Length: 129
Picture 1 (spheres, one colour):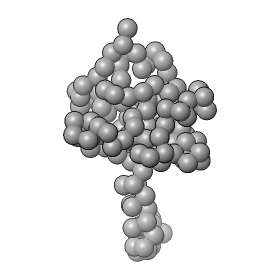
Picture 2: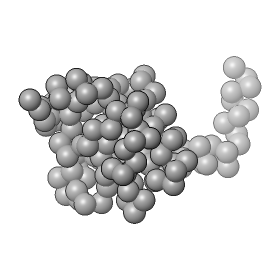
Picture 3: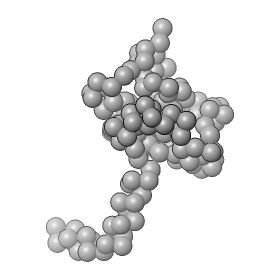
């Protein structure tokens, strides 16, 4: 435990870590605010399965299943942040897709808490037939 306390003394390293956490993640409340007030400032991408997407997704989200990401980079933009989300916080699909997209030059953020947190807070959900 003492080693952990020693690490926290490196405030320069900590600042870099916290800046990165803030730069590459967005919370559900912030996303909801962006959808309501600044819809043209980002691109929203759902990387869950087709069945999950049609069962309910965040308004204005485009569907790009993780398995088909390489065929769908045309849905991403290099001019705006691409906010990517998956099902829940423990699911790494959004992070994996963000890694693949940033490697191709697309700026990305990941929705913290994923769709599960969005739904838990009872925010609007779109269902498709």
